[in-house]
Image (cartoon, rainbow, N blue to C red; front, top):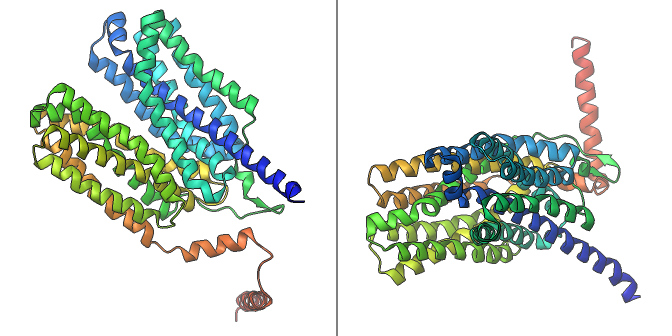
Length: 441
């Protein structure tokens, strides 16, 4: 008897693990793909005869398209199904790089950036919609952390993979092979049979839940929260090396090791954050506490010229704490999303992340042009403090009012006779008042 009961549970666990592995692989591809063009900038500059400003414009195009299409992709994922949208994104991103390798020109580079941005906007809405619908609630934080870690890992290994491809088959071949990864992983997901997620998930026991607006105060606050998170980390990630070298006298190797410690510890922190997210419901307070400590550490880096070992330790600690909040961040969005609207919710809030990605290069580039390298870290501290305040707001927003209707929706037969009696009385009073208004009384 025990074996009969355990078999379906084991099958469900195996299916969840297979889904998580497949979705995480897709997320790996997304981060790998948008790192391929920057890694090939020396090759593209030589072949196209353009300067770095023109190459940088391609990255700006990518970021703008990603920002503009996140929310529409979320709506599309909820409408036609997240699985179809994810498969289209993998294929489109791969074809963009393949076509650039086959027809290398500056116009194709910009077109490729547009297509890559469009493909990139698919992953967060589709991935999180599928994970939210099919992962065990008790392990949701860990599922989100593994998914995020896979993306970090894709970006981390991209330089080595692209360098190896260029050394063996040249720049053209590197574009084609890197692009082919997308359709191949899409085929893998079809073979594995990843489940779908859409607005149809709003049906419970055959009853369709009432439509709720996705543009809620919580979603708006979380969109700003994502933007502040992006601004908090972008300055250190993109300009940390040059700031440490010009403002603190760090050597090139020391500055790069410090940034490597920051990024590597971030990936480890994501996995630790998944365990923490599954053990608490106060995700906003977790994010606030981690970023408050983070702000203090970065403030020390900004104001004190630390010895090399202490600098690396401080950067690693800051990176770790920044990674820890990622699963809690995602849980906040999932909890704020109406039933069947996870794709739209993640699409909208991720727009904030890419808005930060558009603003941050201009802001921190301007700071460096003013010869204020300390303010690369100082401005990050300011954004971290704002992030802490906003994270606390998310935990102090009223939860009971929103959770109780959801609970009744998921269990429509759970109401008691007393509750039914009160409901009938309220309906009768409403009908009586309506009748009085109709008769002019």
